[in-house]
Length: 402
Image: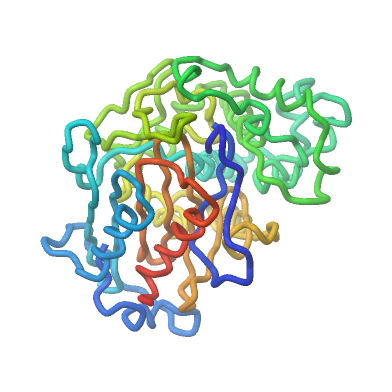
């Protein structure tokens, strides 16, 4: 999520792209190219185990695609993780991790994963559904009584499912909070303040009558998690997802935590003059349960692999998560589920993922149900619609070859 960037993506006239470019206001080596992925197409199921040991040498073709993120799209740095059809995982880097010192991009370094956080949040909510603590089709009023109120806004008319799939009609608070990211980088914003900003605006449509990406939905879902469990959001994500999966470099920042803990590339954001300035350190409370998690490309891929592989949710909840609703044509992907996107690439490979954008970092990618896929991060936001389209193309290029 970015305070300045609207949700964008290629139109259907373009070939289908990887899940991503869906955050707003504030997100590798495949031998043999497209032919090597033939076994992953809809008509040829794939079921090979993933070897998590990174290979010592990467695919020059894929390295070239990663290099192009820096050389063509002009991102300061890029880092990517790819698992190929043989179950071999490889990591790639390009550019520099620090524009001031010229330091290298750390392999599989930590980055802010922005709106990929929404899938973590959705997974916790769906676990609570499986446990009988939450009803997907109950109004949010059931769990947050008296909170969702505004002119034309009523929590009795908005269900948990609608929040998860962005069909609530609630305004996106980040469409209102755009401003100077450098001036506000150290400001802590409570979740209730974010929702109040949204509820002061008119609803976009009646609940269930449309689709519009809104970080407000997931801020409310984070509050729901805390109300139902009686425990902090960060603790629930950690105990239910991060620790069981052994994700050692994935975490929800502590209240007021502004630095990134582990090895990481610096993140940059353009000033008013267009020059890139370091914005690595920032208070991510503006993103909250909609976009504040830190992870690495490989661990983000591991999370999505575990999720769509059935390790985190019961079958009924996973099926509900993967039921897609149609998105506007400017978005990539086949549709949006409950915090999850499905994308069929130009060569027929189906990827599951999300994507995210926040000042300093953007992530793109997705995995198949067998863990094969691409996850990459760059160290700034796309500077134009053309750049964002090209970012989506890069995943298709890595997987499909052309």
